[in-house]
Structure formats: structure tokens, C-alpha cells
Length: 283
Image 1 (cartoon, rainbow, N blue to C red):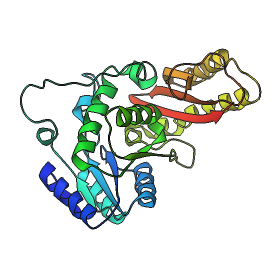
Image 2 (tube, rainbow, N blue to C red):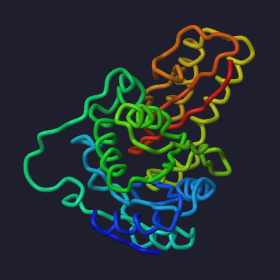
Image 3 (cartoon, rainbow, N blue to C red):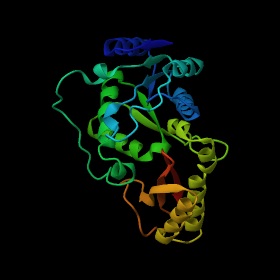
Image 4 (cartoon, one colour):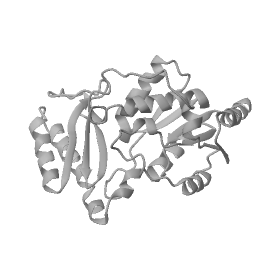
């Protein structure tokens, strides 16, 4: 396994693989790897001959009051995971490598797709993600890139970026990897206290209950979701959002149609930890 830090070195490593006729899959990460990331690596292997991983905590997607400084950084352990999973190349750039030095004159704006969910709660979040992913795609130039369903809005926005910026690659969405009790795996789960960790799966349970009632004929979900939010708050959660959204525009849906597919998605705070989750379901 090669570990490289510069754009020149990662390009040479990728070029070497592609000159051998190898199809390359790419999984961008912010490190603090866990079972969810490993499931992405394994899915990537099914779509390509070689897998390339980036480990980079992107400052551009963190707001001024968010956890950039305390975000878990476990590079040595992450590299061990990558080697165990048979990753071919790991790209570990610095901020200087990714963004250079001095004033920046270019930015990326997003319309509509980031108005709700995490885009609505975290201004500038997806602009930062699109900026870094666009850079990474230009640097790595993979054949395939893999992202997880847990960040479904991110997947949709990056998919639109690929179309509009004419990146020559295909995207693959991996299903959410969960702990035995249903909690979606996340690097931020490490922030949870033991007591909070026991409570954390409740959000997923409430979302499943809501989906079950919707699929049994409740086509106006507003009051149902308010009930779920009240139950979560009574257990010590602080709600950010919980709603049913359209799959394409990422906009709240007030009236559901039989036979259509939707996304129920939520974000909550449990103590200082922000948890997100979603379920794709057919009405």
C-alpha cells in the first residue's frame, strides 16, 4: 500500500495503475475510520480493480462554531485499517496541498438542493464539500467513486456536480452500515458518553415507526413526525430536523403519493453530539 501526500505523487500512483489497465475506485474520507467506511471500501472493490482512499479533514465544510478542532484524527490507526482492507493508495494531503497559500478568488454556489436538511442547518457546509470533492476528483480522476447513503443529501449534490462539471466517473451509493442496535455508524459516535450511546438508537427506531405508519396509509406525515420529535425530546434529544423529503430536490413533502419513493431524514443533538440518519422508503 502506498501512502502519498502530494498531488504529484498521487497522480503518478493513479497513472501507474491505469497504465496497467486497472479500473480505479475512489473513497474520500475524513479519517477516524469505522465499520461504515470499511463497507464503502468493500463495495468499491466490487466495482474496480484497485481502491484509492483519501484521508483529509476538510476545514471548508466546518462552520466557525463547529467541531473542526476536535474532530477525531486517528491517522495511524486509519492506515492500519486501509492496509488490512487491501487499499492500493492512500492520499493524506495537508491544507496547504489542498488549498494552497494566499487569497482564493473562486468559490462554488449551490441552488435549491442544499436549502433543507443539513444544508439548511449548516450554512456553507455543502459548498465546502463540493469544493473539496471537486478538487479530489480532478486530482485522482477515478473511474468510480463511492459515498454512503447516511449522507444522502451529499450524494445527491455530488451527483449533480458530476453531471454539471462533466466529471468522467460514475458514482455508487453504499447502504447505511449500522451497529447491532440500529445506530448508524459515524465518526462522531465517539463523542457519545456511555449513557448517550444507549439512547442514540432511538432516533432510528422513531423513524422506522413513522415509515411503518406512513406505509399503512398515513399520507400526511406532519403530525406523525411532530409526535416522533416530542418523544425524542422527552428522552433528552434536541431536534434539529425530522421530515419526509423528495428524493430528487431534497425538499420537504407534505402530501405523499402511493407508489412514490421518499426519504425520511433527521438530525438530532444528544449531548454535544450531532447525529444524522435516514431511511429510503416507498409509500
